[in-house]
Image 1 (cartoon, rainbow, N blue to C red):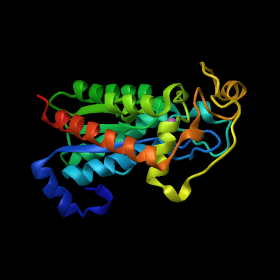
Image 2: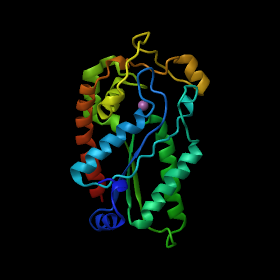
Image 3: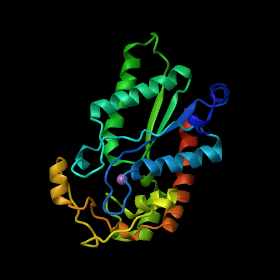
Image 4: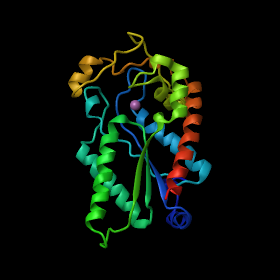
Length: 249
Ligand code: NI
């Protein structure tokens, strides 16, 4: 059930039986020579929509722009400062909490968002902890789930791509985005076949070390077919994890 395609009476009715919501969160950033700029938003959005369709879970609009300062030396990337993203996450949770949602499941597509999500959750809890008995007293629970880190998805990615999976512009995430948008499949020459690995500092340093944007990966291996397999693996894992999150004491 997509929030954006629901009416307010439908949302009110939904809240009578379930007070959780899935919030896909991504990034708008370079994903190497053949990866879509929207990869990190498209992947969790697609999985969340599937979970919503299968189980009736409420799915919020995708937070498309994340914390991607380290990709800013590549055309098309957009970033929020960590402090801005914390404020956005907090306002999104507080808006929905006002209506009665109290379990917030952030389905994340971008590693660079994890630290900021964690800080945002601390801010959200701090505000409530400091106002016990006050207007914002309702308890909430927040969780971040990274779609690519479930055991089934990880095992499948390893089986499909081995050491060409890498850590950025991976063939797995590019495949999943191609599955979601077959009309936007791209191809490009890349050299070396597997990109270098390692750490980085700011945006200029990132581009110097990883000139085509990839880290440790060979996304020429990406395909719609692999994307469908990864989607189905992630769908099962995330649906079960969300159900457990709603049921947890
Ligand atoms: Ni990515």
